[in-house]
Image (cartoon, rainbow, N blue to C red; front, side):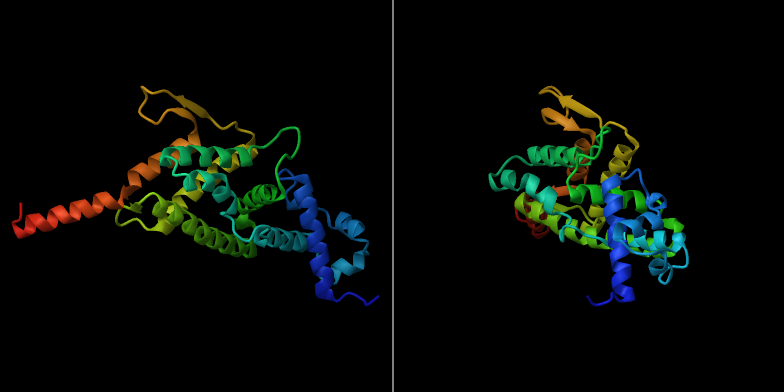
Length: 253
């Protein structure tokens, strides 16, 4: 069998370390992934690692960067789109789409205290989020975090534009789709960090007499609903207002 190159050995040890992180979940952190244990699992000797990294800290830095750059799904917006696309196709009320989609997101990040209960993609998201929260540890990790955020922002911006088109909405000036996406990402990731802490996500039951649409809402869902209502406007309404302004300026009644 051909001998591995240094780059192949590096990739193997990082892959094994990432698998251990995914198995152990967000509680592990790279500081609990010991290089000796990684080597044993990979069936390699100590020398194989120390020809690549000066010490364990160097390995853990590269492991954190590799995990943040890992994308199990090529499109990070695939899961939320799958949760609501049948509703959108059926012409469901926009409030129902927000409520159902937000609840699905909250459920996906809920941490089971008896052990990981997520699919591999969600587990990777939570592990990565915990690593990103400590990005200032290494400049390389900060750069990987920025790259991941940029990729996620682009994917979710496309997802939100699809929804806006489906429901005839546009953003109020001067907010951009990137800005709106960043707002939702900050709120979403904030609740995900609270889930990692073990904080239960609040829910609210709205009745017909309340100021929000009837049904059981997650707090995240109410936040999304408020942002959509406050920061978006119907394209049809804007067109009518523009027509009214044109008629007024031309003296036509």
